[in-house]
Length: 208
Image (tube, rainbow, N blue to C red):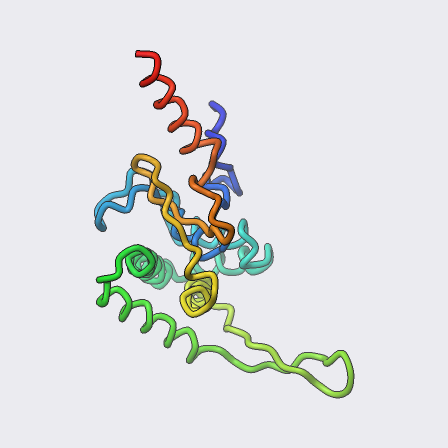
């Protein structure tokens, strides 16, 4: 097998893009390239519900045990898993529109509905407090909807937080990846991919 490009990694038998967005929500959007409308992507790495779950584990949103259990659930309920996967791809496209197009009102409404559904499924659970008594935390049921619900809630945090103003779009040809640039110094999703390609093109243009 030939070596993978530097921006990809083989994870549990699935080829996935390495995280470069500095935020898991942006890395979720970067699981395809070239968002030119909603047609086929130039490159698509979320090819199944199982691949989506493995990606969640890869970026630290799910434990290894949760990944295993959700893949088992998907095998038992393939139609439900397929439905959840289709919803995931729709959410990804809607969220990308929201972050890149000021006129994407319909997409914003769709993202808001996904956030509302995820919020309604949260449960307040007791956890030991550092001092006296009990504290509390938010939890989601570990079912086939968990990965998308987690991302919807994280997306809400990104959209309403200070990081929203630091989201940037890579100018690389047919790329379209997003990343955080809080210092205003970053141009490319990755210097090893789009940055180097730009350098090669610029050098070729100078030496013609």
